[in-house]
Image 1 (cartoon, rainbow, N blue to C red):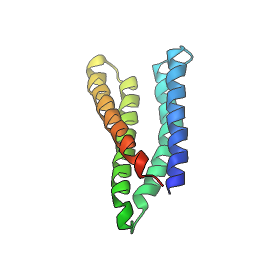
Image 2: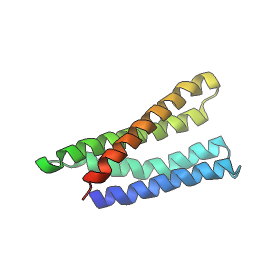
Image 3: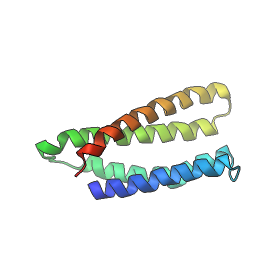
Image 4: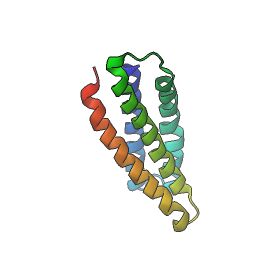
Length: 121
């Protein structure tokens, strides 16, 4: 499970960052960035998250790790979903709260990632 998490996290974050770079370089527009997030980032993340969420009978010594990991997975996913929705929003009024959610959830995910790192085997 941890190996799947590490591999998928690496792939998804790389795909997200690559899409951001392509958009910054004007290779794709904002809708292209949203499409890349929806196509290349979220599906493998959701699949891996479902595997982590399905883990039962977690040993006591790993419960704190799994609690933090589950929060991290949820917050990172919520951040990316909000960002994709903001990029597709028809106006600034609609996109602003979505971008606020993205920034909040992204910050929480970064904090949780820092908490997870020393707990990983």
